Image (cartoon, rainbow, N blue to C red):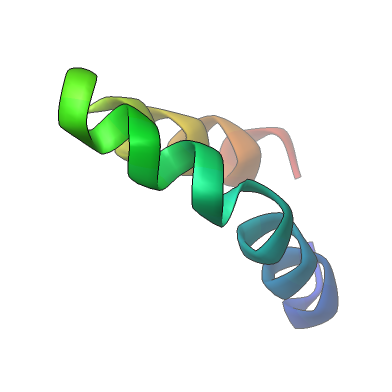
Length: 39
């Protein structure tokens, strides 16, 4: 995964992750880990 794609990923999901952090603190970490694993 390139830096560009990582940046795009965070820009696209930043809002959702921020909301999720209030309900499920591990959601963001899990998502990033999954994304990096599948790259």
